[in-house]
Image 1 (cartoon, one colour):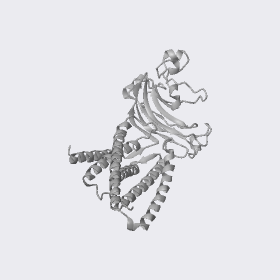
Image 2: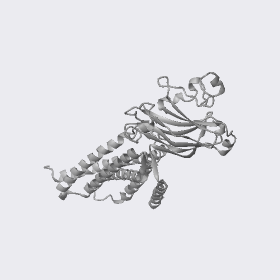
Image 3: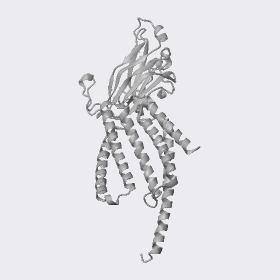
Image 4: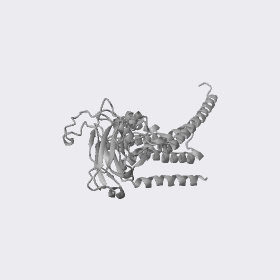
Amino acid sequence: MLWSEKLNWVVFYFVGILCVCSLITNVSGSIHEYKNEAFYPKSNAFFFHGGSEGLYASKLLHSPDASSSDKPLKGKSFIRFETVTFVRPKESASKQNEMQTITGMVEAIILEVKERERIGGSFLKTDLLCCTHNLSKEGSCSVGEVIIHVDPENHEWPRRIKAFFQGTNEETQISEEVEIERTGMYYLYFMYCDPQLKGTMIKGRTVWKNPDGYLPGKMAPLMTFYGLMSLAYLVLGLAWFLRFVQLWKDIIQLHYYITGVIALGMCEVAVWYFEYANFNSTGSRPMGITLWAVTFTSVKKTVSRLLLLAVSMGYGVVRPTLGGLTFKVIFLGLVYFVASEALEMFENLGNINDFSGKAKLFFVLPVTVLDVCFILWIFSSLSRTLEKLQVMFCVMLSFHPDR
């Protein structure tokens, strides 16, 4: 394949990524949105994963008797169900008795990662998730409910919240707030056991908040990190600028490129800090800010690698240009930028769960392979450049043996 054809494919791929991203108007983070999504069968239940995040314990714990409106948001950690609605099929609703109070139930279950084995009948030596008549006779659970082995140290956890369909109504809701009293990794499951509810959809959203803001547990330290990095880059940029002005007569082209990398680094950490600060205060990630932050990161990573590769080839040291290697270097940089941009977009656009899916591997592998290519090319080029410098040094000694 010709270089021009390869370049066309890279450009086409990058444009495709931008087109897909342009369809996203807002990126949810600690606000997990459900847009008419379906449950899927699991054992003898129907299951939907509502999210998973690391949450810190509330700094100020409140009594369960206090109303939600009396509890201040500052210092409070919670998972809030904001009009989470379950919609069952019309056929299922029409079969019910209009006068009957309860004609179906969906459960929301909040648990820590270490409590996963408490969901289902594993402690009863069964793989079932929903209670059956036989298990009910043993007094271990109630028919039609998810089997939960309650924590003996805290009988309220795993937390179970029930939503009931009434009569022939097609919809039911959960509007509740659960305060987090222990630091840990939390899961949210939505489940139902009634086969007649098959085809039920979920819509609405849940809000997950830490004591100091909406940043998920794995991202909470990043705002502080990027704030400190912004100050560090400011000091580095100022020191570099002063030396740049002081020694301006000795400046070569390479120094301008280094200045550009420092400027890109300053922009990158500043935009990321602003992005995390906005995320922490609002709970959502506007695509525009996140896309700028992601792009600055990808550009800086690409330019810094290209600069290191060019220097290892002797650019600015033993050769004024890269000659015939220029296009190959630029092409490798362009491919790396596209792969890095795709990975950063995958990691930072969409719902933020502390446990990423296996799909991430599809984006990580190209970046890893290209990093290996950069490393091998840099070290092999550096070895050849050092050999050239040694030869040049020996030649200089032969002309000036007294040195």
